[in-house]
Image 1 (cartoon, rainbow, N blue to C red):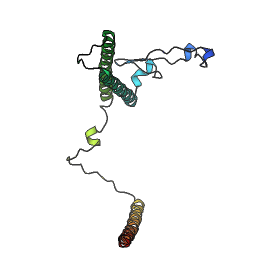
Image 2 (cartoon, one colour):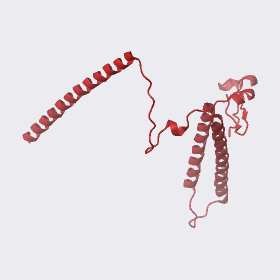
Image 3 (cartoon, one colour):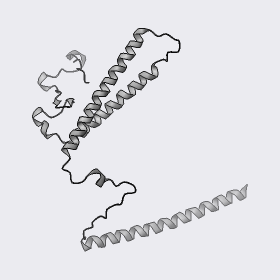
Image 4 (spheres, helix red, strand yellow):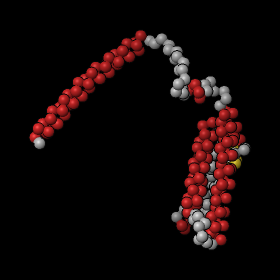
Length: 192
């Protein structure tokens, strides 16, 4: 998917990096060529699920980009309503469409492998996603609350009381503003 970029010479404003400093693309088993900056081959066993998820996110972005390009090609294609197009233009669009579909297939396979690898690496987690995010209609298990320090309890009560007082003050101000607007509207209607 990544093509080699032609290097510019020194006279064109871009210094050429020596070969030992150029980023190298590494292979992840079952995932294909990865982006430059990936860990070396020896550290592949220590790739974290977070890193795999980042690669998965980039893969999803590539899938979306390819899909948008497919729809743009389809939108630019004229329906065969008696108008003859050149065979070369048709073959060019058809080739591009086939290439995008082939790349989409590969990207979905890569995404599937990433997903399976992440699931495999995170099987030892204590909580499943169903426990982390409650669904609507499901009974929520009661949360076990540990007893707190009395100072923390007292501070919480003080903050709770301050919030209650501020809410009461805000309610009074809102009532005053409502009455003021009511009076202004009443005076404006009497002027007319």
